[in-house]
Amino acid sequence: MSFYKLIFVNLSRHRTRALIGSTGIAFGVAAMLTVISIVLGAIEMFERILSNDSHYLVFERNVSDLFFSSVPDDAAEAIKSMDLVDAAYPILFGIVSSEDTPVITCFGISDDDPRLDDAEWIEWNRSSFGQADNAIYLGLRAAEFAEVEVGEGVPIGKDVFEIGGILKLENGFENGGVFMPLRMAQEFFHKEGYSSIIAVKLKDTSQGPLFKELVERGNSDLIALENDEFSQSYSQFKILSATAWSVGICAFLLGGMGVANTMLMSVFSRIREIAVLRVCGFSKTQVGIMIIGESLVLACFGSVLGFGLGYVALRIMEDIPQLNGYIQPLLDPWMLVSVAIVAFVTSAGGSCYPAWRATKIQPADALRYE
Amino acid sequence: MSREIRNRFAETIVEVANVQKSFDEGRIPVLRDVSMNIGKGEVVALWGSSGSGKTTLLHLMGGLDTPDVGTIRLAGLDPTNEKHRLQLRREKVGFVFQLHNLIPDLSLRENCLVTGVATRADPKQVLKRFEELSKELAIDHRNDRRIQELSGGERQRVALCRALMHRPVVILADEPTGSLDEKSGEMVFDLLKQMARRENTTVIMATHERRFADSCDRIFQIRDGCSSEL
Image 1 (cartoon, one colour):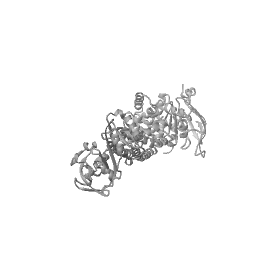
Image 2 (spheres, chains in turn purple, brown):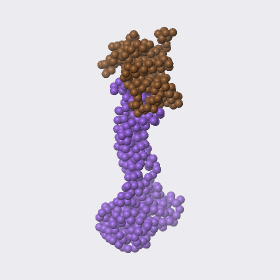
Image 3 (cartoon, one colour):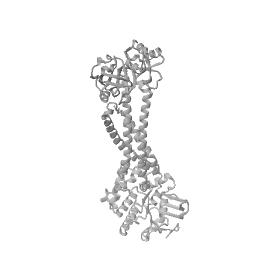
Image 4 (tube, helix red, strand yellow):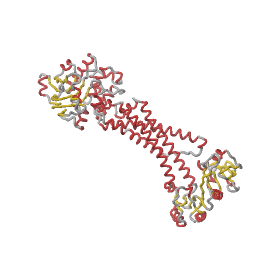
């Protein structure tokens, strides 16, 4: 007989109640896992778009969102002409809509953009990009969703564009997006002479600090950040992550309430028994730890169940045709550990009040009345 | 040497002096003036009718409750002091209740080992002690049975076993035979006395049955909240 066995025996005596408590935590874990892994996956996809074959990003200083950044073409040319730059690719981001799809990400890219080389061309070929007037290029998922083929016209905004090619990209956002030659995109979005960012590949990455200095000296409205540096500082990513964690923690709070309810019921139904334990020499601390221990066991089962549920939910979402490609969950080990820690902390927090109540049980009172 | 003479020289293990206790903010007085000294190894009966305050007095002695007035010392410890109280329950006192108060769904053995869990005693020593006691109390053939599977008499013997596990100096028994039939009651009472004698443990037993009280070394009658030795 050990203290730990006592904890398990206590839980096993009220299996349904324990299961309900665990399920609350499981839903919290599943919700948190799902939301956060989807958001982290989305952030990672966006980071990959930005960092495609590049080391640095140049964009307008102090913009809240890269969609609002404006980098002049002459700045792009100046950067391209720097000796320490191997290649520089301007990209213009925009949001377009078609009849059935209100939001499609549009990428205005130059003819030499490396993602065109990396893509698998499903219809037509790489060399066709930018050759035809008024032609746009669809990611495979966007093409499947719009049910269009090369040569067909597709209404976007007020204009109708011809499908010049369909390409399959690994990145879900890109695969669900529209690609336009940069000049066409600048005209369409009324941003002639500007792009959103410039992705820069250096000849020697050790010259990064010098590159940053040259960019900022050449145009004080611009800033150059290393890809990792950008990811850590970009406020949109921070907001997305914070939102995901907030939603997850809210889900957990509900789970915590479930645990609190379960444990409180458990304490109330065992008042006499807890009194007997006190009579047998259990200290108040031991009684409190026993109750919190029971809740941690619930958290343990809940976490395992929740990870299973969350994993299944993510796999199902990945297979939903409408979401296909857009959801590429990122199951980061640290995130899994963090979710588990939140589960345990929530569970322990939820059991604090029941544990406190248990320590306040007066053996004489509890034993006097049946 | 007769028991009476021996008791006179026995070391005092429980001292109760002018204890008063009431409930409901003084509206229900239970103990008005109780004093007694009990020596080591004595088997003492607190005899009185239901509601006379026997259980309350036992609870006060064991530190389950605190007196309004008066002092209690058990094995030199003050049951009103939180630290002493824990030491009392862990080392000095064993409780046996009218309703056995065993933990359901634990086996007979596990119920008895609970005291060792509380004190974090050496599991091997605890188990050895349990095996000795369960054999002497003739419950060793039911060691792995759950409490629900035991008879009333067996349950009370388990409660006695649990009370003796940590070698207490005093056993506080509250109507230990009260919920049993005559035969089982006598058997439990005899075992209680026999074990106490063998281990030189003091027994303070609350009972309303005169026949059990008469079998004890001393009888304190609790009546109208006061104690008197018969």
